[in-house]
Image (cartoon, rainbow, N blue to C red):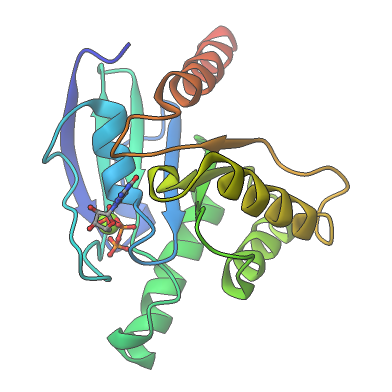
Length: 201
Ligand code: GTP
Ligand code: MG
């Protein structure tokens, strides 16, 4: 489904991002939730996006070009306490500026750790997206780390919590970078959106 995936450029400023003529999908979520790992899983490449066991690995807006046709964007995590207040505020501003100014951004995947109960900072971030008209899709990560029924339970709790923000719960995918879970479904969603984008030309 993906033939070619290449790293393009890293930025701190949304105005320096590549030309916005191609559809784009961003990956965001708490530090260490598995954004970079999910990008590697989707593109079937081990080292395209840099991953680490230590939170705070991704620090820039990283553009990847897929099949010369669409962009995937790896973003730094939010809610990472160890980087210090000033840097945290700078990252947050960089991310929010990027998300609110990038007109070709068709959807932002908000990654949620499937092992956890609903977390306040995830819900706050999603609320900010809703208030700013940024379309989101949820991707629950690390589903290999617990039983299917426990994942389903945590997903249900999280979807329930989003009803404080949305009338209807957002679209979601259950994923594991380890086991390749959710790959086909997630890519099918992206490719459908890409077709719509190019139809409008
Ligand atoms: P930052 O860039 O620091 O914000 O982190 P990130 O969200 O990009 O996380 P990253 O992909 O670097 O993964 C963090 C850690 O979680 C690494 O040790 C990964 O191996 C592990 N991890 C990511 N996805 C999965 C998964 O689906 N299953 C399991 N078991 N581990 C995962
Ligand atoms: Mg990362």
